[in-house]
Image (cartoon, rainbow over all chains, first blue to last red; front, top):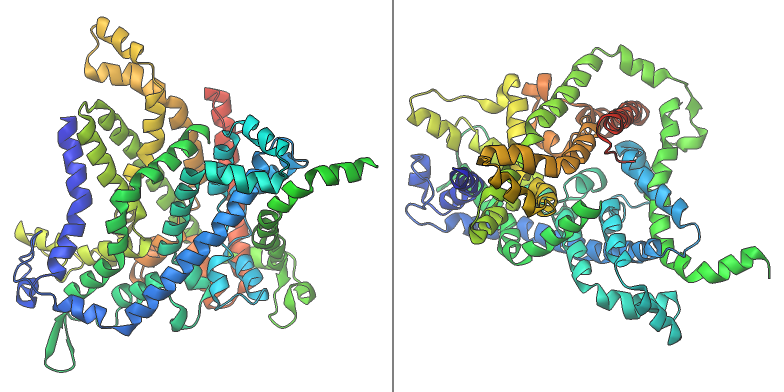
Length: 278
Length: 301
């Protein structure tokens, strides 16, 4: 009985993706007749040719990759150094800093004052506006602090004997010992940045800077050709809007779907630590 | 050497490591909090925050007297409540079901699949919902047609928005939210199950008397956090799923703040509404925690 319900959960989760893939790979005639379930009928790659032939997609892809790589790097450095300092019981003012940080989990200035700060720093419509305002997630910071607290003190003391200062201990001893936790937190940040929609909505103006998520919203949700279900592009080339949209979704989701099985265990490990220790 | 210089010398390396993080919090988290003074001012783009004129509670009064006030409060509150009532128990049920599975490989497979939608962006989930529910060629309407029902224009029916939103939230996050309960379940003593077996307990009785009490602290903590978040429904997804035809039920405080504040440029007014809700949210989480501390000995602080 339990297995049966779980199997249903699997089907409900996976079917939407299979359906989108099938429609996007099917021929127009079959899409218009609505007879596609989870297997493509009249295999046809033209939608993908259309999507991949659109220079907007490539610009958005490039932007997303830049924001993800740069943002993850900055976030990792700021979060890990901060978390390490907070994990050290002998740091003066440690408790005050912790309170300062925890307060932000319950109260924030909100969308508009934050926007005004970002604007006053001249970060609007720049790459920095995408990567700096979200540089630290308090949740990830606490997670990393928990990781670092688990490192035996003796290792740090042996580093001190060898003449390392606190920064040296962090770089030479703590970082190499925490590769797995760095990987986990990097993944959390990278997914967050890849999927981010609110920052570009608030802080970006020029289409040249738009990441995939904004382009996707403009093409799929705010699509201009939403009145009928068939749109003609360039006269004789009939395009079924539905399969074009599904192809666009697939193209922008594929990277996550492909790497997900390989990195999933890191996510779970990170979430577990967060869940158990809080 | 004075005490101050001694503390400074001892801590300067650690403080230096902490500095970027501190700066981040001061600039991007605390400066906006102080920026909230604009809610008591007539924010003027050219004068800046400090030189703008004080107007006292004008914008709060404006919001309270606005005919949109009650509908917005109601929409925000109801959407949050729906999500709490239906979304909160869902992962608990799934975690218990997963716990009942004996085959480790099958359990891992179900988990892997159910976590997946959590990593899909809100833009994609909202796109999928809207396209599947489309009256022309959408998957769901094809199905309805197949069983002989006429097409329904789901995304134009104000009465359906809350249900659609909550279902999509459950679909997206149910698997991921089981993690906390599965972690709690690993801590349940297997001897308790053996003892229950000796007493001749059925599977359901074991779930009721061993599994549920075993994860109840995790349930309470998650519940407090969720009650605290009732009014903080994610802006992104509601914004992406709503359209003017269903504002009656789909317009919530955060989307209204975006429209009034960011799109129309009424910074002071928008920020006032946001702060108003933030304070109510704070009262929510404080009360939930207080109640929990009194009745269950579990609390956030």
